Amino acid sequence: MEEYGWLAGAIGLLIGGILKGATGAGAPIVAVPVLALIYDVPLAVAVFTTSSLLSNIWQGWRYRGSQGSKSFVWWFAGMASVGTILGSLLLVTLPSEFLMTSVSALVFLYIVFRLLRPEWQLSERAAGRIVAPAGFLGGMLQGAAGLSAPISLTFLTAMKMERARFIATVSVFFAMTSITQIPTLYGLGVMTPQLFGVSLLACIPVFGGMPIGAALAKRFSKKTFDTVMLAILAVVASRLVVEALFF
Image 1: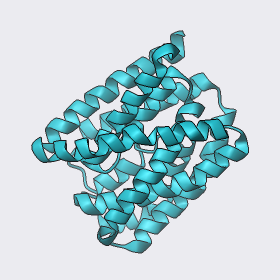
Image 2 (image 1 turned 90 degrees about the vertical axis):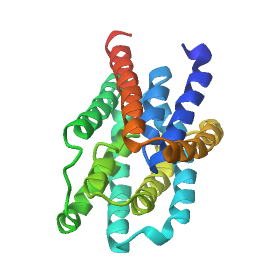
Image 3 (image 1 turned 45 degrees about the vertical axis):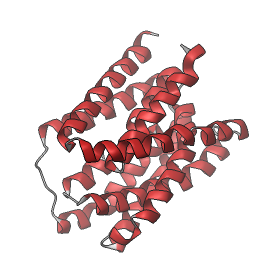
């Protein structure tokens, strides 16, 4: 499979970019499992960091006027940055099979929550009380598996934010985790100059997919798009489990 790994990886990154362009978040939910399936979780996380950083800086700047409470945004992102350091340490100490099954389990957790509790809403006051631990745990998952969605996106989605505020908030979150994660991975020996070059190339399909996703979001209902993407995630996560357990 590694013979065509670059093509499959590029497709995964492209699909991730489409999802990000449509919803403002979620690119690693597709891209990281696909890359982990072909190679391993540490490499997948490292490859995605630069495209995550640049795409979220761009979106964060574009939607900067829609942040709402800046203290909420920066508590969420700042604690995520701290959690990312701990998560990155777990990335290099835990077995690859454990990380692969963990990534798939997190994807399934996200899918199940989206299906079972689509209408549940978290009040602004309640969210303000738990924003720091939510940010920290989301950052820890981002560092350990490149996948914070089961906490970060679920937390923000539960608040029923309007799209612009959601994008403004989550972009700062992901940018901060990437800013922390890149030098941490360098220090741990996961990121190398060569891999950093690959991660720069990974920006091409991600940025290429974002305008496609934005166009699709205008032409199709959010429910239809979510259903398709959840189905793709379920297939990827299932394949990841099989790869981890039997190969």
